[in-house]
Length: 338
Image 1: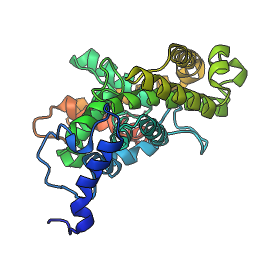
Image 2: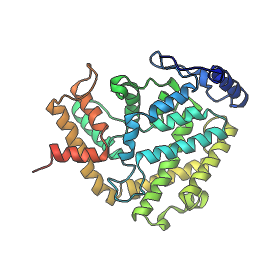
Image 3: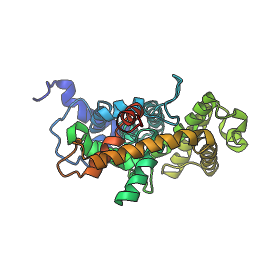
Image 4: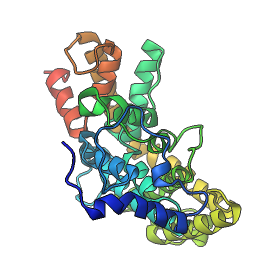
């Protein structure tokens, strides 16, 4: 059924195009110059740009809602203030919009890409991702990477196998927010960098709250350059990013700030992500994910999926979509010793 129309709706696309022509950087993607969608789209909305429609499709998806119960760093944290994949996603989105505005890029494209970038994370975050990858690589000659699975979710899993039919630019930014290939758009490049700004600094914040870190143990060089608190460090990184990118004509950090971020990230891997406390939790979580994947591949359960999906694909999609709590309950019901 066509939407009710009126003079505002009739002028909307022309007005947005006029505003973007006058205000956006030559490096920005124009909203009505998208390279299109995988399938013809019959859900046109005259009061939203294509990237705004992508944003809304992501926010209303089941995968997005499940992010509130997926771990950012800690396995089933007991406190109310630890971050989840959902809060991390919202933090990345806010930073990405701010950077895009400062650089006169397309804020709606940056927002949609940021909102969708982590939809494919397995239960227990990178621990679950590594567990799925181990089983698939060892037994089936396949791999699992959360960025690739994020794209699979928006392309074929959501909407009962129909996917969300997102624009090419948003799909590219979701796929390439991590991994070997850079995004094709400047907006995607912004999301790729500010994702790191957010998770490194907010994970430090959570580790301090959990008592896993002493603030005095943080490396002196990055702290002296970027600041003592997470908000100070993110603000410094953002200012450096927009100033460096404006001069370079590409999304870029200055060398000192890029080195400081890498040093903080390496510190977190050594002391938190792969530290002794995390190892005790992640080993058990990884074992649960591995066991559930093997069980569902082996059991031949009637899992949802497309007609041409084999048992390994269906099981991978099913287990990767679990929240942390559902994963633990499923393990207890199906596999835990009685």
